[in-house]
Length: 332
Image (cartoon, rainbow, N blue to C red; front, side, top):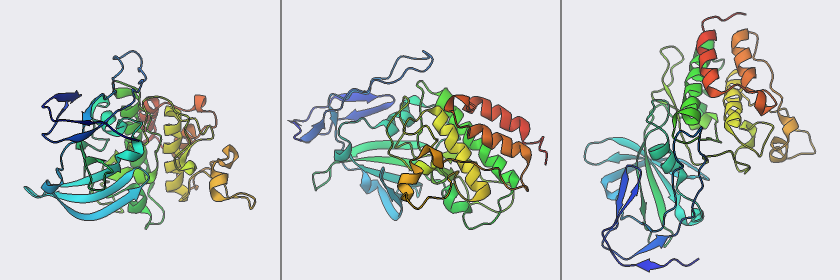
């Protein structure tokens, strides 16, 4: 695909609170498709994410020192970086933009323009486009650094997790989903709720006080229900490939199931299926009650999230209220 060139012009292009100034260089101009965003309860007009002439910014990486690689996946490569001026740590995510030329940078738009600031969502510090010598321009995003790492790696080394810690995680992840589903100017569906997308502000200790949690990695998020099956299926509900806010709730229930059983609610694979094929089968989803050492209330709340029919699942807003009510009314 060929992209037209342009000469320099100091024209500000406004995206929410971010203003991009075209630099005095000849750059490639990406032509972005218009995304028709879903209005949520008529709270606000749809955000126009069509970019007629979004310039590629210059290279700002010289302000940051790379310390180490902390992750790599389908959505990009992540490195821990340190700002040279003051030592502030951040996570730098690099997305090869030529692979996503037919879409808008939704993760950045959602975190910067759609969702309000929240203590339950990983903060986007800034983002920009930058050219590469190899002619494969990319998007750079800088996120706050959560020192405790992700939930999966933080607790895998431990045996049985305390019920108090599971309640703590349940409530805070539900609060994050309530923000994502209800607090923004548009309805957002995260679509990838799983333990390694839940981040801890501080290191996990096997005793209270527990670290605060944040929901991150909105690389698969959308602003309307979606029907694309591209994610880790073992954390998705039986309605896949359709994914909605109810699918996010299933993902939360699957995390709690994993914390109690150390596996998502997927039954063992029959010999005639590959693991990927089996995880794509709705019949593979069969939640089981948590071990008897956990309370009935915790089980009940988990199973509310794991109802087979997405129409029967509890909403994130109602779930937050129920969890806070039931946490201290536990029964065996």
